[in-house]
Figure 1 (cartoon, one colour):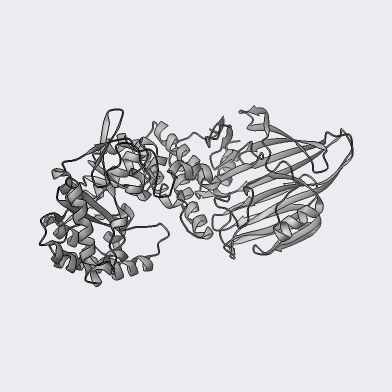
Figure 2 (figure 1 turned 180 degrees about the vertical axis):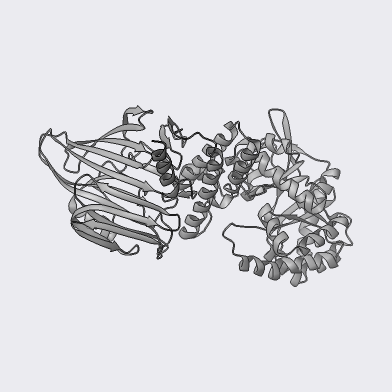
Length: 624
């Protein structure tokens, strides 16, 4: 029999999308009454967990928060819990970023309270054994994890109310399980709850009952008088006392040594599972790792390197990588914000590159077993995949803008990227864009292209894909990308490999992820001698003679121009998520009639004009 230690933890959550008025409402409605209760009841102990973003908000909007926390800590009434400054999913971070997130938040808590935190919490209890070394390096004594993660049913893990000791390569870490099933509610009878705690105390040595609550849950218990009744009830029992995690560990008598596999509070899912199961999460994760490696390899100015890493850490907030129930538009806006931080970090490092220092490289960028191709120029970068032969990421560096869609549109069945190739029946094509039906007879959009050649010095890559058209005819596409400072040229050679004439519609789809439609964005098409302005939120079709299409984003002073080498047809369709505009799908298409063994060539140019690119061109002309 031991004394049951009850550790209640208040979790103050955050999100980069949180509006100031919503934060203020949360503070006045929930947080302020909790602080008032703590101040008036010194016998009630509590631990508080939050992120650095919340600390920033309190410091800016409610500086009195610091004074209250200092007073409560001087009474030894509360304990501040550490963690990651920008609330990241730790298993997705590189070891250096894990330590940086923890140490940055530790520094801020020390400034606030005068003491460093002894333990930490990771959002979503997103655990991985590889975290042990980094948490140990950052000086943390313990980690809070949900019991759904710690209680795996393996030998040595049957104890629910005692600390676990886990190990990796000789480094150890103490895990404190949180039993969320023991969170009381306003209607919970105090007597029955105390009886339940007594049973736990009788069957365990120094058991720990650790629960994490939201401000709303804690405030409702306070207002219902539940805590007042509970304090009165347990005052007569010597086997129950309020405690804090660090205080509990000083007197703990029973530890369970075990192995805890990767997991999270989502059943049967780890943080790595989120990445593998969602293509947009996978793309953002790959970019984050890519930028982290770039910063780690940088050997220049230390101040510049630190500034770049600070931007990188901001791009690691968990909600961008966690399948939470955000709306599609919230997810889109959040991921765009994360990309801005990543591009800003990359730009800080890239500013030291010499003029004319271009990069063409190939490696398994997104860790899927296939090489991707990276083309980086001083003012933009492009990423090309063999899956669909698409340009799957286009970044304009001067404004830290990512112009490929980082979240799914409603009803999407394929990635909405640039230069996606479709060979379809004309009727199917019309149904796809007018009615949003899934393509059942297309080829190439989902094909894996084979690399024919890659010329780093000329910034060229030649890809080839073969497929069987719905009629059973073998068809092939030879696709050649040529990139330069001013944009991208894509040359197609479509060949009928069968012994029968091929009649089909060949389309090239590109999606530029502009923000919501407003007067600062315009779409212009040149059809014959006629110039037309298209509406961003309405469908636009010109069946022939389109020679030029321009997208202008005046907010970033960037203009994109598509030009086919011969007149084409053009279809513009707004893409929506939750009935909100998120992008315009731009598709050039041609009707093909190809005899057996013959081929047809098509070329599409994407020209990019931005202040950075224009400045570079002027500078070169002056030198000449």
